[in-house]
Length: 233
Image (cartoon, rainbow, N blue to C red; front, side):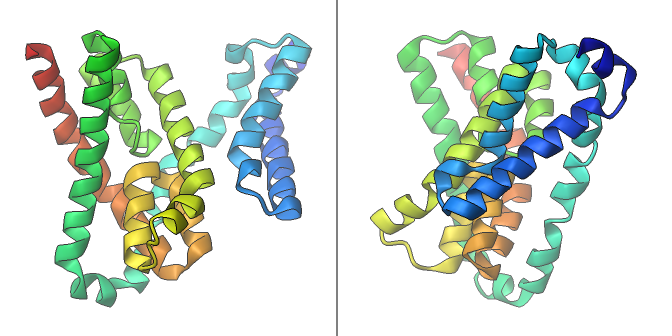
């Protein structure tokens, strides 16, 4: 198996795509948030690599090509936003307040938990970008001196949990406004949350797409400020 992975430049990508397709099939069949395609694909890929005794670096020789599409895919989320531009203009103040609140909630939560568990500076900045898209979060973590690989894991876990828990939480707090739903998902669970927002409706998807971009930019600046605050505490 190792030899196949090393000689075939698309072996890793093929395994990843097949695992994701399996997860998507399970989600369609059982209609449950627990069968999140991304979560299923991660679990299946790990099982395959462990069973075949393939290390991550060998697997990533082919799988890395998938990550090249991450940034373009994020940019494409601007399309549903453009289609709801009129609605955005009418609710600009509320949208801005919602995204800023989401970013501050994420950063303050990480700060409080880091103080509670006694994390050092490097560990703290590793968790700061947890609620923004991987393309931006990796750069933020690297710039601040965090563990980039752990940051990627934290971002994925945050997104998957947001995707799974979105509907129950929205129902629990009786949030029915489409704009509010989209802003909440985009600012807390980035692209994976946006996938759920698009399932809920066009407006939810558009607002979530906007949140990804704006929350990412705000977090770039906010993470630097909170990193400094933590260093002086």
